[in-house]
Length: 565
Image (cartoon, rainbow, N blue to C red; front, side):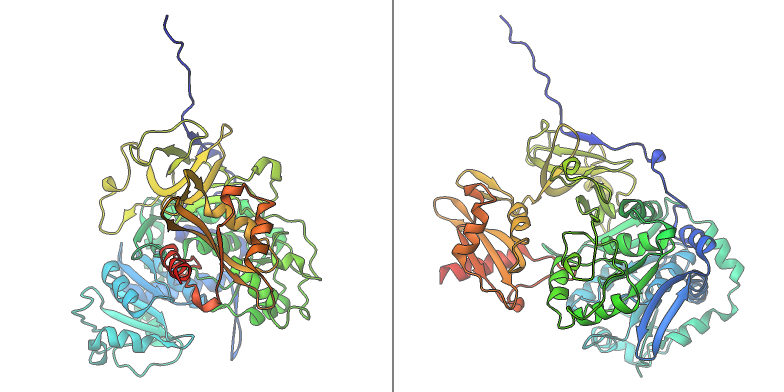
């Protein structure tokens, strides 16, 4: 007698059609800027406080300054698909440089100001930028000195005639900020003056020819596991996310959004979340070049910020700042009720941000998400459901076969925001036969199409035959009032394969001890997920990437060494 067949649903979930997504506008960067300028022309688009006073640009100002940059770039020979490097912190000129590049027909290459000289050398070589626009001083670093050491020919070049054997495509360098005195580097005013004879009509007609499928930007991965990868994205992918984040955060023009963030716009997440959502709803960007907790609180108070965006370690630093008790943060509105700012005495909020999401730089951020204020029972502890136009599947990481619903495997994604490709790698070598990008992340789909992300496949801890997601442990640990930063790793073990180890940076005034942390976790996690060891570290002992990601391999080595002694 034959055994009846059993239908097992494959782990594939697809979002609604992209055409059904509300709130999308023009899908090119020049078109996006034109559209928001026409809607919000006199509104304040950004404010940047300097030693000389506050710089405030309206949307019309941002458009005009971007046109000014575009004219100068055209005078330097920038045209269709030319690459322009932008190496700056969050400041007004960063926006005019990136939008100006797109207006000129070029590709904006966003470079991290956290880069070491060796990393910057790598980025300049692989990106093949022809023009580099940079900020003179970032913290204690003089980038003019760094660049001159990387390319000594800068010292003998004449502005406008740069010839580099180290960076053979680089022909022009200009800086915003202090005048350098380096003869091969133009100051910002001299750079802008180059465009005096370029017709404005030429820029506007160039912008009008831009298509959503054209290359818009080149961003780099954070490099937490290897050298940063160059990720090329089309205008459509970038602008879909800019419009989309406005909807996901629930922002409208009537909210008079004032967004503070000190995280670099050279990361796709902050570009979409902060810059994109704020400009899409006619709000104002309250710029802080480098994170400084007391200064950030002062900005929030004086500029009436209602939409703050930060990383977990920054929330902790804000709460520990000396002026925490004295500032008035009553203007805050779009702040998640589970963050430190929501606990401030002057803040009243029941808002929940769209933090239940999953994405990558390769998809220019979110692929799955639940919108702000989605009830907890709908989220169900997941990382969201596929957004319009997106499909997610889970495959066996070894063989590539789609696994049944509920079974764990590698997360694969495709959709309209997927990258055009990695620099130097044919797209056919990046996507599978169905056009999916294999992310290297582990997780599963449930029967309602919700995605549950469990971390990098290489980070999943295999202990005594069981799999432990370090993300799950960290989500419980970060809620402990004495924990400032936490990361759980697996450390090799002779009989168990790996043991679970929690690495914690405590708050300065916290009195934590290992068994107390383990007892806290036993109340919330299955016994096999409770770390065998809890290690405490100082701030300086755990290194973060520029985007505040902890390097797992470094931390694993550090924990192994600590345990061995």
